Amino acid sequence: MHISNNTGGFLLQTMLYLANQKADNTLFDAINNSNYTKPPDSNEVKCYGVYGCFPLSAPWTDERRPIAYHPESPKKLDVQYPVFNRYTRDIPKFIDINDPDYVKRVGINPKGKIYFIVHGYIESGDRPWIQGMVNALLDNDKYSSAIVVDWRGGSSPPYTQAVANIRLVGAITAHVIHLIYEELQLPNLDKIHMIGHSLGSHLSGYTGYYLQKDFGLQLGRISALDPAEPLFSLTDPIVRLDKTDAKFIDVVHTDASPFVVSMGLGLYEPIGHIDFYPNGGHDQPSCDQPMRNYIDKESGSFFWGVQEFLGCNHLRSIQFYTESISNKNCPFMSITCESYDAFKNGDCFKCNENGHLCLEFGFRSYESYKRIRHTTQVIDNQPIKAYLMTKGEKPFCRTHYKVTVKVSSSEESILHGGEIGIMSIIIRGHHNNVSEKIDFAEESTYYEPGEIYSTVIPANSVGIPQEATLNWEYKYNPLNPLTWRILSSPRVYVEYIILESLEHRSRIRLCPIFQMPVVAGQPSVFIQENCHRLPEHY
Image 1: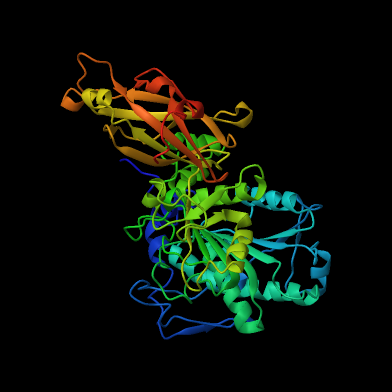
Image 2: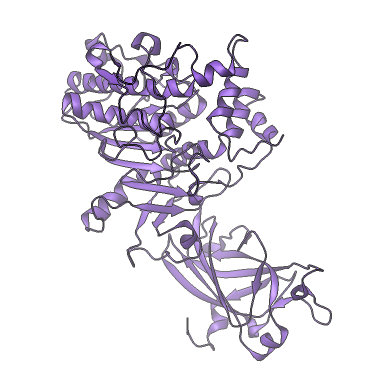
């Protein structure tokens, strides 16, 4: 049986979890929550003291949520809040909600940023990615504090129960934040930033909701990393994360299907102030590797290796966001566009033109949002969907280049005819910085005389482009007469190429020497000086 890591859902994750548990746990118990003798009455309400009451009536139960459960008790959930700062990265102190005075002694700096990091389903607060994000945040700002919301007591299967549990964990976390606000005498919650992955995204939304409902306070920011899709797609805003839950919400979509609901672990619909869709929001680069590779990455752990294999796209949101905190050499730029296909075709490549806005991705996106709000480039309630491309391995950040190729309409080019193959490019910039070799497309393209072809490609930054080397890989197909070359060698008569950089906002036209064709297997250098005799007609 072939298992694809692009469609690995919560069912497969649950099965994997059970394989790592006691033998008396069964798949039926986990999925159907058979600890209950019957589904709870949708009219039943369960209350947990100061944390409030939790109904199951609509919208908590509807056609998209046919079965809903109450949260388990606070004692069962046993939520822990370890606090990290630059002095306590390895041995944190823990917040005790029953000891308000102790909050002053756990190491939270009231003058710095306070981050809350929230894990998702079948996870816990001691996962390596959480420690990596904590370190990145503290390295970025030595005066900040990082608090982990460790709700492992409620994140285990069945998924439906975990979904119910985050309602109460969100309420408890709201009380913890209010306690910090009171004891440290914070003026507001503007410096509190929650970062949640998967179910942790919606949990963060519940925290923001209860802070407003119970205390009249509004969170400064929520960063949602691939918010969970099952039981949240197309639901009432009160059920899922919504942009009213904080003053600013940025969302990263990495495992979302734009066409079929439940084909990915993450939501596709925009739900924040800015929604980022790296690589289109699904099918992330290098997430098609064999399972063995993921097990090796997890030091031979079958459980965590297969977990990462099944959730590769889902986990990319964490990896991208963590890199956006620590990588100050690459701007992680994105641009708004009508669709990812339009972005790839280069239809949206000029900042602040035709409504296309350039935004820094991830951790620093709020600065971009403030800028465009200040210049009134944003209409309230209008979704801002931004796209970018990444590499398939660290460092993920890449510079975007739009490459436009004009195939010559000269007599020689027309007589030779079109060619099918793969064009690739190497870009050289200032100080002789050179990019890797990048293909224009994954599949062969037919290049026809007189036509213009444009595409956007990601590459390592070389500064402002100065020259380029084109390579042509001829694709022969005995069944396709268009690929037959008997008397002439495969070649494409490229009149010029135009290189544009999104990050550097530069544009340059490059030409081959003496209008020589690009011959298969022979690199051809294009420079600006070769264009001086040609009219600038593009």
